[in-house]
Length: 429
Image (cartoon, rainbow, N blue to C red; front, side, top):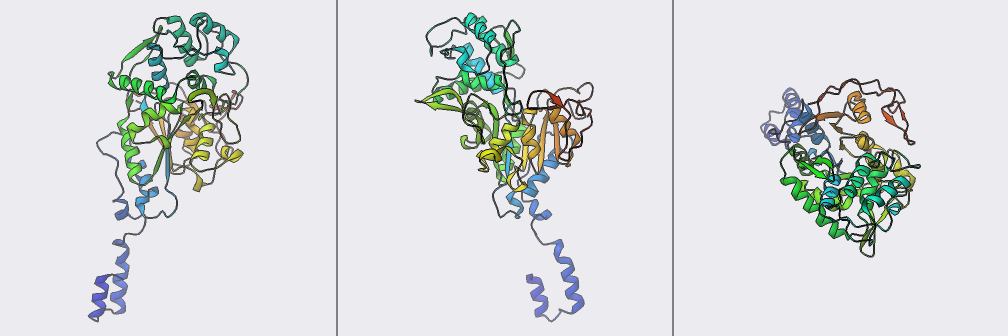
């Protein structure tokens, strides 16, 4: 009962009609959980940073509703999870780190190229041996002077083929749990101490942040982006989420050690940074990659990639073990916000219960789900720096927008099994 009401009763003015009138006005001034006055106290996204359309308002609504500032949360803190490359930053930190190491002769020579990946083909083994020569294992490869060696490594990393066009990887793998060329980069770091790799990643970070937007670098004869920028909008979103009581995680298909060298720039610590995790032996990184769920440590059979990102989130954030970590969980054990830019992110972004943030890089399955917007919670935004123009033609959602576990393609389906129709690109630069 309010103080004004007590005063009215004390004055003997609490007739039935007067009391009813006062009671009727109470909801307009009460600060019930989730009401407008309470939500106004929630941390606010900056209005000085441009978002597409009403995307800022959509995200703010989710923060207001799901954040602990709403006063309606008695349980665990809500969780937000973001991919890293081209989601939180422009360009790719794995490419930047590998390029820096190749230009500065910091990549250790493996004992055998075949040891770096279980799927590496004999053709790739021969191409790397021919281009890079032989020498003492563990010693740095002279890639700053040997363009042919640097070229083979960059071509295999980027295109999964040798410079002559031969397939670099072959065999069987689950295409929704791993991709050999992604796992191969952390495996190339085997033999380094984690602190040494961290130092290299930080040197690459400083160089790429200092380079002007649009800069290009050359490695061997390969040209690639020579700059990286944190997206201001994503830094602000992460800041706001944390202030509103969210636990914020990075879930990346980059080396976890490399991702940790970057994630502090948006206020995310190493404990909240998940990436491809090399096992360490005798103080040095190995080619063994940590497993997830019911998949044991191995040679990269599972990494934070497509369904693998769901597994790592379930296991590392929610403590769900074994085969159950691969399954979509109940809403209480799913993230509130998921953000990504590619098909590699689609499973965990789709799992989010509050908002699915999709940065448009014209990736079929992600954009099919984003534009279909089955639950009304998708937030599609162009890239914040140098956004892509409108994609010509429709996304092939109804025929080949989905990647099956064997690498074949089929229709994108909703949870009820219905097929998503082809979608036109509506939100772009």
